[in-house]
Length: 350
Image (cartoon, rainbow, N blue to C red; front, side, top):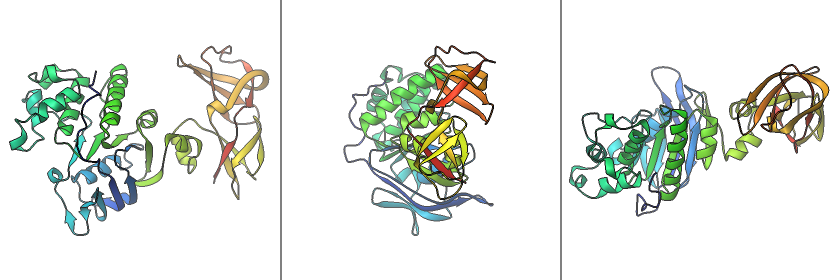
């Protein structure tokens, strides 16, 4: 287990991060366009989006590994990119953990962690302190190849924490781990980062991971920020149809006048957030219930242990997803009724 009772990485207040009007291009169309994002000191923000949307490019730009075509990046009150300034990566006080850990296979754990420190600090207590924080003090003399995948990612984290960064960047650090180990390491790292109060940006394409780890979630789509908010904001009040379908399972029903309430194939639905014109009503799977009736036919039942997802093809509408308790009394091919049981829907303009 990680030593989550460790001393803070930095004795000073954590640094905020400010990205303003940032654009990046690689000899072609822009990868990032007019992106503005502010992260408070000590905040953990998950950067969520599909492959190719610009998540890693944003991280590399913050770290100083890419030169934006426009915009500024500030760590605390210090501009590190823009306005004629470009601070090299090693002077930004930014730590980064890559997807594969990027450990040196010919160096033992201690020397891997020490590599990120200035030479005059490599024999100080910082290496031992960082290894103790991630629960690896007893493997300091081991080679990376003799460690498990989870241990290797902890070494990478220790190397990033040893210089006491103001901001920590994590680029899908759990994607190469098997499911069980991924959940364990993710939970331990989350506890450690919260305990240390490090300002952190975590990149993922996994919606569940973003919601679990992020104080806020920034959703990228085609190089632009589609929405920034708490996990609840994104799930219950998405900015548009694309965000609604990307951050969770969505049932969408067309409504011509989404104000007050709308009649749908699953009954009358109260509208919490209306729209001036035609729109889609967003109903999450837990807003629906299956029971006795004759409104549709079950196509699939997906069992997850803690709950189940039932796919129902409605006679007078589309196929819908209904989240139920794990003990589902219905089976594929059964005729069932589907009713709305939520507290109100959001209308998403077309």
